[in-house]
Image (cartoon, rainbow, N blue to C red; front, side, top):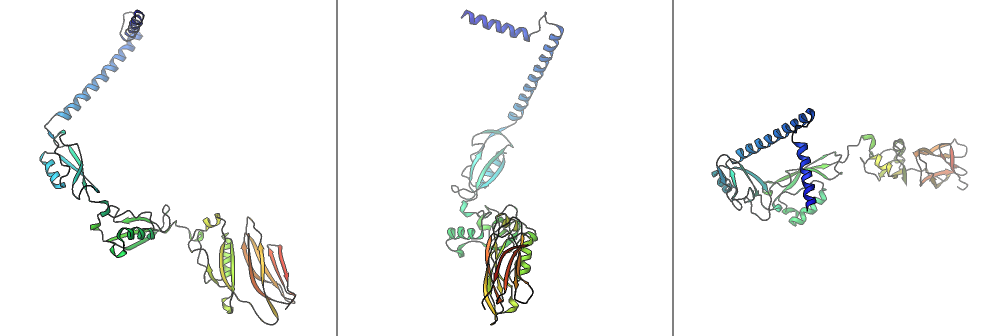
Length: 356
């Protein structure tokens, strides 16, 4: 015990010697201690002044007790607080517990002593959440219809209409989904007759980066356009007896306006359906030319030549492609005629007809 007291006494003496000015201190040490005395004295004065100012502002003047307004009608609550010279802040909020117009969650609590002209805040019920307009943003029209039919059983029971729809491009909202609505979510249904919706058209893709509508256009010209955009395309041919409909596109499997860049990244293949007119007489044979196109990283030109005996070689079909697919093309040709398939300058396949 004596040892502990000695240790405490030595420690206290050491601190005292460091803090208090002693006659044996050098002038430099005395100056440093005076500076520290001035700093801490100024800090103490500042704290005391702040405290007295706070107490003076907080407790000077007449104080009143906050009235209990929870459960009151909003107008009654405002009158009660106004009579005590208190300011009111009202925050409307939906509630399944309190009827519309009833006050709840007041702050400060009833009985709290505060100065006059201070703020008292509370929530006022806007009624049940089910009596408010839902949030439609991010939903599709089909999802909205399903949700409302579940809520109201039949479409003709829905208390508002969707007569106004606007479509616009969006970088953040998926195509076909709601970007925003008017009136806003939470608007009381009794004041809603019509809801206006803004529907996403997806990204604003430059025209040369989106698929066109090729239906009704010439197959060769369309394939050239697609090939230049590096869209890999195959063709399903159906025969027609109308020569003017030769190589007329009748269908495409990719919707107009779709993003070409996304399509290429996925490595997908576009399919076009097109008419083909074939000459038929007793001097020719009708056949299908089957071809497996080799897959390459860069586009190449696939050309199918037709060469009848005694005639010049003619281009029967041509397109830019990256290959990796098979297709067949109908043709008619004379005996000993040849069909020659080329990938740029490389021979892919040659077929000679020996029968009529």
